[in-house]
Length: 215
Image (cartoon, rainbow, N blue to C red; front, side, top):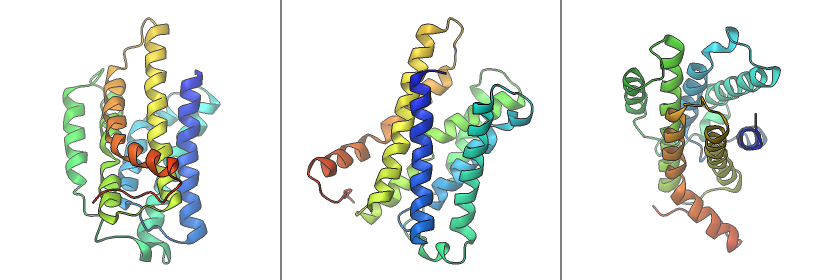
């Protein structure tokens, strides 16, 4: 644990809370990609297969449960909640995300730390998380206007990965046996995907105007 890891976890948690606030306070999931949420549910279930086999700390186990539970709950709510699902932007959320799942799993079979079930699924989750935001970004570009809570959700989600890059750099410099290069490279790719969104988010914040993305 270090300050960058903690900051990353807290911004990730904040992004989830903002999304839950939007869904449950407004009873609407407009502007949110269900496909991205389902990808995140797959990501965390695949990554934390070790939840019942390896105990690191209470904090670690607690965060794993939170991330799995919240991602599954959000995906379920968007698909099955009788009120929330009515506001789902089906016509805009058309990204073919099965290709992302297949490509990520194939990559995990080729590039992994160890050829074990847990390590392959861990690598799969890292690769998939790097691109899981794509359906959300495409949906926002197609819709143009972005409401305040959705914009903050995506911003903090991107900030979480940026903090994790600093975490990996810190651990590489301070831990002689730290070799999670898969996570580092994937994290850079994931953060780069947010670059365009970050730019327009900063412009809207600077001008105190509504966030708009180019179509």
